[in-house]
Image (cartoon, rainbow, N blue to C red; front, side, top):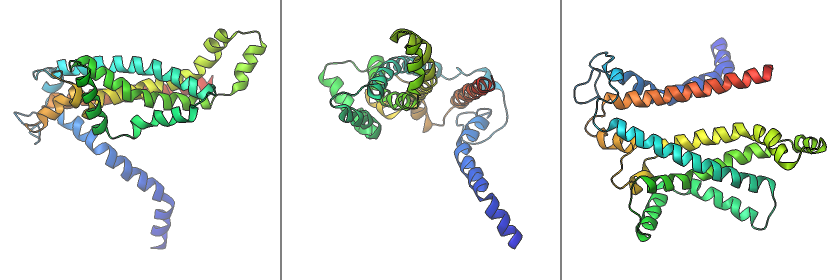
Length: 264
């Protein structure tokens, strides 16, 4: 008993880690497994293994068009939010101005506010301004809540920079533009890339705010919601598994590149 209790004492953190990761990855494992299910109408019961779903990911009506909408909206929202959020992060991280603490507080409000409130408020604004709900109202809404996450991520990267590197570049007769292009931007670029990936994932996955402001346009999360009660088709699991694998490849590639840079 003493040896068993000692073993648990030494490996308790590892046990917690395994249990935590198991809890996190069970839904993902279920999604991947049932993407190979030989279903008929409902993809809730395992009926057998097949490659057919992966060979025909667009075999369900509207699924690929809705996926295309999500990708286009996500890319546009990410592009705009990353540019605006990065500029705001530099302003907050590098310059002291009147009202700076108040602006910092405002940045966190969209992150802290419930999505139901944000979605309903944006819907009210769009209706009062006479906007036709659709593709562009979704893009505007996604840019609005993605900016906060970009600002927080990039600002954290800026705060970790060593100002002596830029001062050294200035001492070597580099002007402000050259210093930014050769020193500041390369150092901040990983944070900007991480913020862009975070913004894209938030935009691609969003359901609540999109549901309020989508009009007749349907995205992939809306497709999943509308088909869940009737039994989600396996092609949706295929797309979900593909997005997970792509994200995993990007993360692993980033880790490999960073390790190579450290070795070099």
